[in-house]
Length: 237
Image (cartoon, rainbow, N blue to C red; front, side):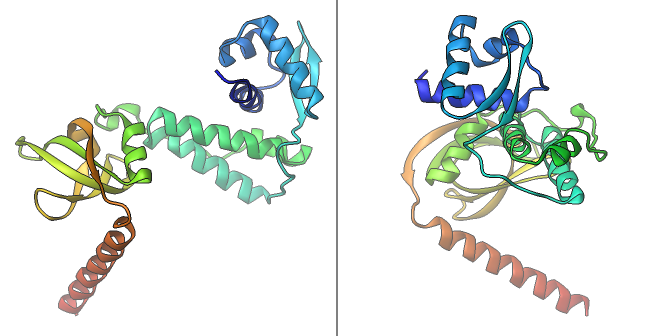
């Protein structure tokens, strides 16, 4: 691992874990030896990070020079914490970890009183972990395909149990209580489709790149949905 990446990972770990955090825990989470950890702590301190503590005692990050100061109301802090905790319930582990790391960075910039409030929020989300069907595919690849706008070859089992192979242009995902839905332009059907991510059995990168068509496709999809909603309202009236 590159030195810069290793130091960034160590800072993220100190922000995220309950403090003071022991050298043993930091070394384990960062994937380095204790000797290397002590050198990295010294490097961060030399760079301006105020890290209190020592070997055998534990470390506490009291000021992070890489982040600007922030201030939030008590309700804003609760809302951010609630949003992060909800991702633990409805998203995959990688996305939930990313949200937790982002929240830790935010907390690291708060004044002491607000930082304590963020560590002891009163609002929580809860749902049973077994309510959602398991996801078999690589979610990192799916996110990358949407960001970089390249096509995917998937095998998909529909609600009737039929298995088909399709090339899709992935456009966006929505997270619900019971499923994750993928909005894509299906090249087999030549139209927009929603796919239950849990029903995608295999997924591979395909050769097509649909940049810069994504923005236009999303605009067309939104216009189509608005027209459908307008027609529904008129029919009901």
